[in-house]
Length: 64
Ligand SMILES: [Zn+2]
Image (cartoon, rainbow, N blue to C red; front, side):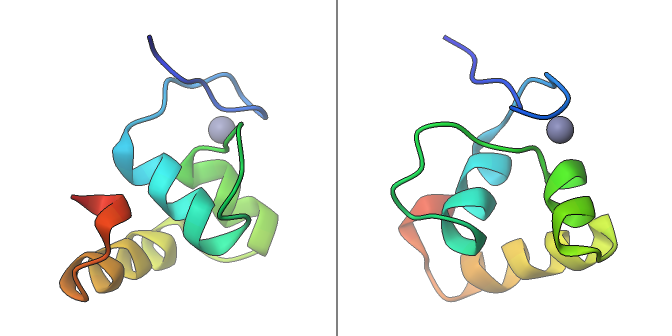
């Protein structure tokens, strides 16, 4: 089963879902892709990717 972005319909990977949970809503049941998250927060996609790398470095279980 593939989750898809609620905004653009892109297929989501673990990073997309993890980032949405971390940045938007931990209990979310539907998610945005990193691209749409970036637009949502009005930052670059690169910035979100950096955040994901940070969370992963912290050992966040959402990004295992
Ligand atoms: Zn999207």
